[in-house]
Picture 1 (cartoon, rainbow, N blue to C red):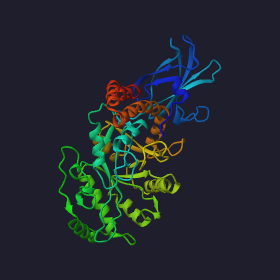
Picture 2: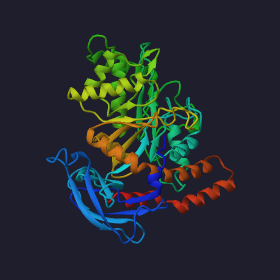
Picture 3: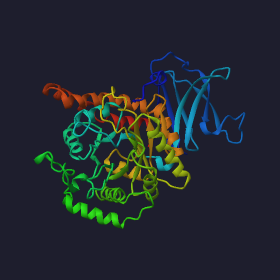
Picture 4: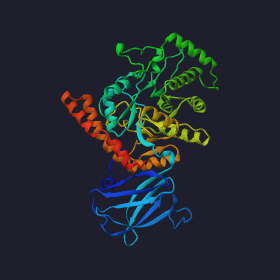
Length: 464
């Protein structure tokens, strides 16, 4: 889902929304077209209410209410100067003469480590018609920009080149959408023993699938792309040599009872190779029901205990409860057991159109200093991410408590405006992908005119 503009957001513009703890900040509240609620020149009692502290009448020891008398400005709004003392959401609450609330406005104070980390929404796992998806890489890219995404990776089965194709198509088109290289890694069986590896290579500089000369290797002939531009990938192994190498690795791999050595060795090898490629090794959808659970419980426990992956796809892929529900329970139970690992949420979509009820079910919010491949990867590895469940209109967020609370605020107050900007850019990107030459030329002119809007938007609402 995209986050819709509510009546409240259409009636008021509040900025900045996010700012550092302990710094004096002036928040501007501007009416933007709704029924006037405040009288210019009149004094109002304004409360600054810390959300986490409780009401002072009930919890005086923890409550944090600050009272101000402010004069409504000439445009019917307020300029509220205050220093916010702890990381949390605050309400700026305006009262009438009887002390009842007229309106309140949410803002958020963040600790120093989040200052300069921008909330970026993305998808790290999806497919195009170059494997089993329905649209071209160019169309999928434009559609996800229109859905409100800041970055994403195409991760077609067995194939790395579709993501590079999308990157190359848009490289000279002015857009603030970041396309990251990727693939879903599926490796051959090892001397007849099933490897069954589903692993996402997000952002790797070269293909892991194409390290083995299997049936998919070189399928597009001269157009075959194994790496990012300017990167020379390792030499690909002949299939028989790769099988011998993995057979030997499997024999050396120590696993508990009921865990098969070959898929364990293949997964371990693939995770390691993605890291060598400077990518993010993602362990996806273990609770997908493919006849039975895709990954049996004994094998899943082995993977989660060893944590050879960089991030766990805690949300993504299917709408039935078992898929994401079991994975979320696993994540929180692991946290309770002292296991800590980064998480992401992805659609694993096979159609980018909203007619596909799985096109917008999950995403990742990354708090990153920059919308750039390596910065995003490092931020996820450093635990600055949450998984966002948008299967229904009542969103859910999975992750560590402090980031979940922050992301919840952003989903209510920040992302609706953000998504509104993305929608137009995505529409123009799609014209570049499928329009006539005249339409493409006009779309590029419009994209040039609006280029940089997202940066200005972030600077306005995030006081970093």
